[in-house]
Length: 300
Image 1 (spheres, rainbow, N blue to C red):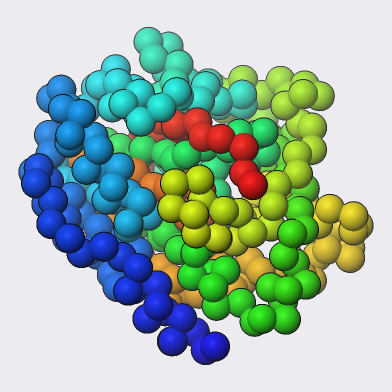
Image 2 (cartoon, rainbow, N blue to C red):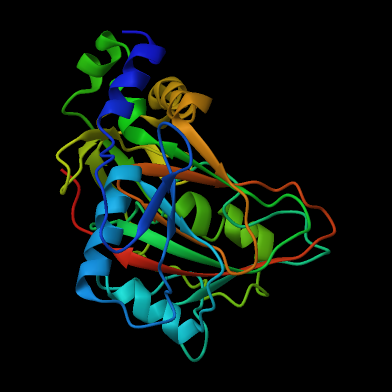
């Protein structure tokens, strides 16, 4: 099947049914929606949390505008969706260790998250999702892109799907957070990080190349350029051409949306079915965000 046809299939699977307590405005035909009628700074009723979760499952990433969140409130919002991850390599805020600050200053050239990836897939139980809150943003630029990995799976050729069905890939934090990784090379001793990787943090984990979503039952592509190091049973050299082909396919424009940040904007993405990319197109400007990450379950 060609991409356009499968794209239409993916569209049909987005539920356009009504919501009782929130407003849902799709951002594109395949991924993303802006949610209205929600004040995340106020206590969230169970029914509102349930509708946000439903919107997340249907749209894969949801956005809120004009929010005002302290670190403690961002943490509490995250906890409404599950247990929170305390990052092994990036120190959280002193008053709120579950919240990490993602900051690019005016004199920095490299940004955090500036490659296509899914968060923390080197865990046995990678995240359900992450919630990112914008405090300071550049006048222009600094957008984030999100890619639908259901469609990435569904539009693979039948031959490639059959070849990889049931196989696993090896994930590790080492390429990014190891002592020779890109994060260490960027920040060294001055990152405000907990960059003391131990063997447990850097061990290798195997996850399915095609992951079944635990809530929707749909399959999605589940490899990413940050943390996937090879296919199980193959060397890195043997794996490289296959993985590079998958990485390119996973982020085709037809699968993506692009979000323009404003101060007070919030994004909540389903890490089990989405990759994201922080665009680094704002030299000489400052961008400051806070993030919490909600733990998930073991992929199958």
